[in-house]
Length: 282
Image 1 (cartoon, rainbow, N blue to C red):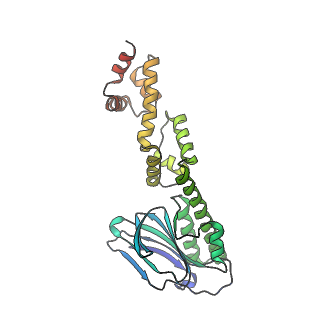
Image 2: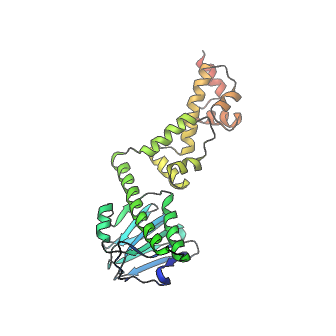
Image 3: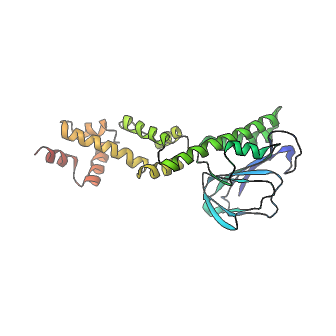
C-alpha cells in the first residue's frame, strides 16, 4: 500500500473549531499495489466530513448494514459521526483519493451542490485527481497563502464533483451522451486520419481505460472496432464506385497498410476486397 497524503498543521485531527465556510483538514491518495489490504472500521465515525473518490479498481463499503461494491468513478460522502466501514483490496489494484473537511454550513453547501446523498456517480473526469493532488501539494509545501488556496481548491472540488454527477445522471436518465456524440461525429469526419484512442480520451476528459468502457457501453463496440467499421464502410463505397487499387483505398480510408486492410476486410466479410468489387460489378 502506497500512501501520499498531507495534513493541516501536520496532524490528523478532525475537530477544528474554525468559523470558516470551508476548511480542509487533510487530503491523500492511496494505491493498493503492495500486497496488503486496507480495512477501515470507525464505528463512531469522525467529527469531520469525508469524501472518498475511487479512481481505479473497486471499493467495498458497508452501508445500511450491507456490503456494496463500488467501481471507479464513484464517490462516497461521510457526514460527521457516521459509521465508516470500508476496505480496498490489493489484488483489485485499487486506487482512491480522500478529503477530510469541515465548515460553518457544509450540509447547506452539499445540498446546494446536489451532493446530499452518500453514494454519488461522478465519473472519471481527468481533472478530478489533479484537484486532489493540488490540495495535497498545498498542505505539504505550506507556502504563503496555502490554507486559503487549499480551502478554495476543496470547494472547487465539491462543485466540480457535483457538475460531473449531473452529467452522469443525465446520461443515465435519457441514454443520450452529448460529449460522446461529439466524439462519434469527430470520428466520422476524420476516419482517414491516425485516430489515437488516448487523444480521443483526452478530448472526452477521462482516462483511456474509462473512455474505452464508456464508449463500448454507449456504442456496443470498442473505439478501435468502431473506427475500423467506419473505415470499412467507406472502403466498400470506394470498391463499388471507383477503380482505385487496394493500396490507395487502404490509404484513403486510414488503415495502417494494405495488408492489414485486406485481412480486416476478409475477417469481417469473409471475402477479399477484390472479390467484393467483382461481385458488385456483375
